[in-house]
Structure formats: structure tokens, C-alpha cells
Length: 376
Image (cartoon, rainbow, N blue to C red):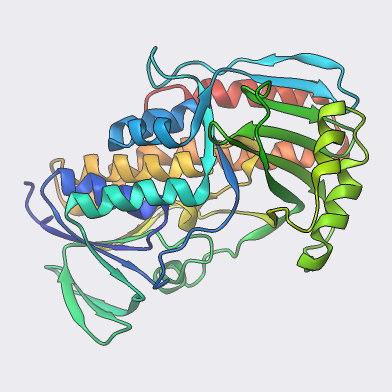
């Protein structure tokens, strides 16, 4: 084991944080993971995943669990709002010839898979706990926790999400998350047998789609332009989502509209993004995932690049040189890929809001998917 990395603290029990715990434990490093939510809950409906994410799952060792619980398929069918087919967006089999090019799963289901793998790795998981303060010296970091306990670490990994407390402490002048001008609706439905892969319907100002998340279920997603980030009353979810779906003429979309009712599981989320300028580390504290590069979901790659961060960080921290050199190598490997996803996703949103050039939109998607297929 390289000098100086024997005990690591991961702050945040989301996808990126759990992945970091798993990868460092593989390398024999003692890992504590603290998560402020005592229930270790994961909110939301479905999450779409590209081939690069499935490749990352294979590295983590959770691909089989995902395939057993979620859903994987090849290609994305694209049509106009009235149902007229446009074509099929190919999804290369990046994770291997035996694994489809994309998929989806319910967020709580993916969180449960990663939580089980985290506990099985031997990481010490402490729930209802987070960092209150830390003090760094030449040999390590003394961390004080919200339960008033204190422990010493060689490295602290901030994976506490879009509204990261650790980011505010480590980089007090960091930019705040920015609202994109769009929100996304998600709802869960039973999966008809004929829905065997992801499909999208593209209108003038709205984009809707469905993706299977298991053998029994699928989720609907709909991107809506909203000039301001105002509160949406959950009591109005059904009515508002029905009205939005009513603008589509495609029979498949209208059928979903007709199924909506008070029983429906609906989630609305304003879309925000963040790209922290380099550096992403200070001393022995490094940030990963949404804490440094939160993206809108236009490329279905937010979870992907966060999980990849964890994999690359563990690889580089086990390399040679001083810790600052290893963290610099991590950042150098991650910066351009993460910048591309955040900025390209934001540009796709801008085109959708403006009703802009669909050829530019399609070109950005193709170029980004091709880049994501490259090794990390």
C-alpha cells in the first residue's frame, strides 16, 4: 500500500460516495463512510443509465445485481410528438458484448444494491452523522463529527452532493448551483410487454420518454421549460403532468396521460447544474461527484461520471508520488470528461428551451456518447 493512505473518510452515502468506499476497500484501505440521513434513503423514480455506467458497474462488481433487478436494452427509439418515427439512437455495448448498451432502474433499487456492496466491502458505515470540522497537519486530518466523536484520516473524500457542505467549507468561494430553466417530471407505470427499450417523443418545447426499470415497471420522464425555479405544489402534480402530456399526439403518450391519477407515483425536480473550477482538492480533502460537477440529465450520465470519479480516485491514490501528485493525476483524468458532460448537457437544454437547431442537438448527443465510450 502506498505510503500515507491507510484510512479514508467518505462524506456522503450517495452513489459516488458508496462507490468510493467499495473501491478503496478493494485495495485494503480502511474506510469510514458517514451519511447525514439516518435512514440512508434514496429519493426519486427511475434513472436512465448509459453503457459507460454499466461498464463502471462491472468495475465495482455490481453489474450482475443491476441486471437482476433493473433492466438493460439496446438503442433508444426517437419519434416526433405525434408519434412519427425519426429513428433509433444506437447505444454501443461499452460494458462488453454480453451487456446491452443502456438501461434503467429505480433509484432506491440502485441505492440498495450499492449499500449492500458497501457494507459487504467492510466499510464502517455511520448513519445520522456528518463532519462538523476538521484540522489538517502534515501527517493527516483530524475530523470532528456531529456526534462529537473524532477520528484521524489520511484522506477525506467529499461526496455529499449538489449542496455539499464540505464544498462550502473547503472552497468558500465556490459557485452555487445554477438553475437551468428546465424541470423534469418523472412517473412510474406498469410496463407493457411491447415497451422493450427506451423511447422518446420530441415536441417543439417538450420532450417525453419512457424507459423500462424492471421486468414489471417503467418510468416516464418529461422535460419542461420553466423560466423560474418556483415551488410546484405536489397536490397539482397530476393535473400539471396531464396537461403537459396532452400536448403530445403519440398514442403511447396519451395512454400514459389517461392512466395518471391520485395513486400515481410522480416526482418533479428543477434542473440545476454546477461545475467547480479546478482545483477539486485542497490538502488532504478532495471532492467528487455532484459536489464538483452536477449535471442535468440530458445525457443520462450524472451518476456515471460520479461513479467513475470514485474508481479513478482509488486507482490514482494507490499510485506513486506524494498525495498531492496523486490527487493532481485524478483531477487531470477527470476534468475534461466531466466538463464535457456538464457543458454539453447544459447546451442541449438551451437548444430545447429556444426551440433551436435539432441537428446541433443530435450532433452533441452523438459526440458526447462517443466520448463517453472511451476508456476512463
